[in-house]
Length: 82
Image 1: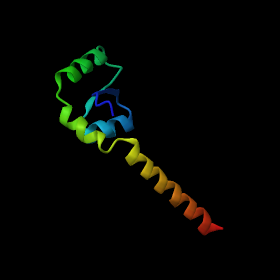
Image 2: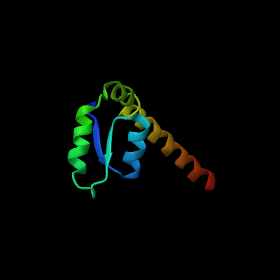
Image 3: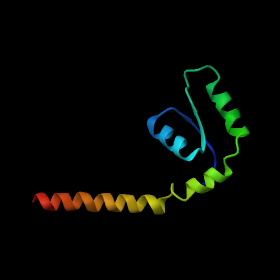
């Protein structure tokens, strides 16, 4: 929502989001100067359009519908087994 580029370590969920939306830089923290080099890449990049597009999908209004649907599906499965 803040539309700030992301500097993240190579965790699976961070990697999935950054590769899909192109809104930041992934680093391997075990590499010397990885944070500094990644920060420089973030500062040099232009993420404005990608961040504006990502915020339309990565927000609570969208995520709460996914959560609601998941909860309804779980409830339906529980009731069908009873």
